[in-house]
Image (tube, rainbow, N blue to C red; front, side, top):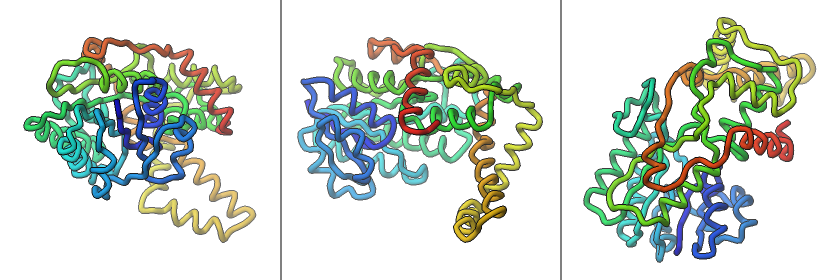
Length: 343
């Protein structure tokens, strides 16, 4: 069985390739946009192809003989609907049996409470709107195609190689001495380990599953708040002298950081940094640290949102449940961060 994975150089795509490469009955083709991002999967001995979704001329050769295609690539939100639809149509033309596409729980926007796949999308930002349009375009194309479509809506994918939800938060806990964020962090942290996401992809690509379009939330089993995640991450790191943040001051500093990010000012700061020294350089470094330490407006919204994305349908359809408990996932994450010099 030949399975092609686009976006293999990213966190999720890399985990998918590693999971599939362990099976002797699967031939994995890992597609990366740049050769520099192929280092991780290269050691698995899989076939690697350079492929940019902006260039569809290479697709027929790459898709030839493929039974399933997994798209974990992350193009700009404005381009994702067009590029993903083009890839799906190319798969249909090539006779690919299954197409597995990554979307996001971000399509649900600000909805709160228990959310399953029957809840209509209500995106609130460009990222969510791009994912929603992409889903709609794929569903329309799949209605007249024999290539079965799976759309995954993962929540917070953490673990080794996760830049957004592991590396960034490890750096914040260590540098900001975070213990909790007070009211800001009372929202639900819907964590799912990247290994469990990869297992779900493997099942969707290979299991005997009823025909039709399947849209699935992918989430973990641990139900914790963001404050709990931050505290337990700090415990795993062994970070001392952590403090609980004052919610009002934290929001004010986040707003300040947002102003600093506006209008491409960070690029200007970087340019000025290269020409500066002494006290000026120290001040600029401090500004950059603030922009990394404090969350964006969208993140603040996420950190306080009380929502739980149900993964019951995925469990029933794919016949598996999350296997990495939070304590183990945190231990893996911290060990990986130490090995790779994050802390």
